[in-house]
Amino acid sequence: MRIWAAAAETGQPYDVEHRLRQSDGSYRWYHCRAVPVPDADGGIREWLGISTDVHEGRLSAQHVSTSRLTGAQLRAARGMLNWSVKQLAARTGVSAAVIRRLEEQNGLLRLPDETLTSLRDTLSSAGIEFIFGAGKPGVRPR
Image (tube, rainbow, N blue to C red; front, side):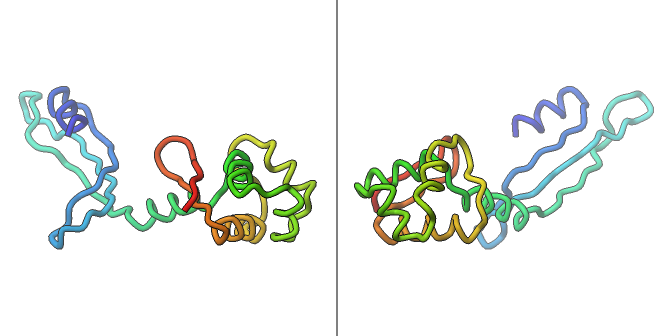
């Protein structure tokens, strides 16, 4: 609403992604853009715009980011379980040297999906919940 109000006041085009409530009460993501159409006096006669449903793409982009682990999450999860690097390596089939290297990394771990899945699933089945979303990724006991 703030972006639309600013565009209406200044006459500048707007471009925003937001959720719209559907007739069934659910919400979907839309990408909305509009430009003012001037009248003969230079005022705004109307707005010409388009709203594109981007819900599936937005969710799949969120899934990609939430399917990744960080070194801090891996280190914290192992600490919560009181597992040594060797214990985690034995349970996942990932070498202890690789686990040590991963825990030292900041940010998302760059590994093949099957390796990340093995680490995440092993730790999840042992009672760890990985938290993704706004802010920093986190870990907590389930």
